[in-house]
Length: 211
Image (cartoon, rainbow, N blue to C red; front, top):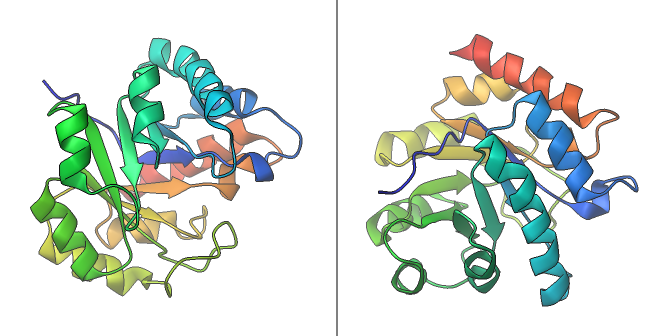
């Protein structure tokens, strides 16, 4: 049976924002602060190094019961026994990923438009990451921000869990949930924070108060 995933506070890693700290240290602190799901994102990492990093994070997350997702690389996700993979619009088709990974594997998809979201649901994704909701400096290849109205439009059209990403902070997280997202995915708000644990806890508090 496919595991139920709490997407409410979804951390996406980025070693470029880590300020010299290891990804493992940031993830440990973020878990202590209350993150509910972690995605390892490595855009410029050799495969063997990616796998080694993924295995380290799995050792941290598995005892805590935190779902572990790999960005883009289904081969890495399968090699380390991760819970799922997150795919972009230019990555492997959902149908191909499902055939290789099986029915219990979690497959997320990035959606930059209502059309992307509808297609992801029709093709069998497990959750949709709406991106970007607000302007963000952590990715330079994204579409124009969807805003809160974009969340509302997609929420009205699809039933899958929606995770909002892009420019999410303690100042706007509650509004994002009120607009219809099931969770928020953050990068710099936790990874680049002076204290990833306190940053995660502050976001967690905002989300708790918004429900």
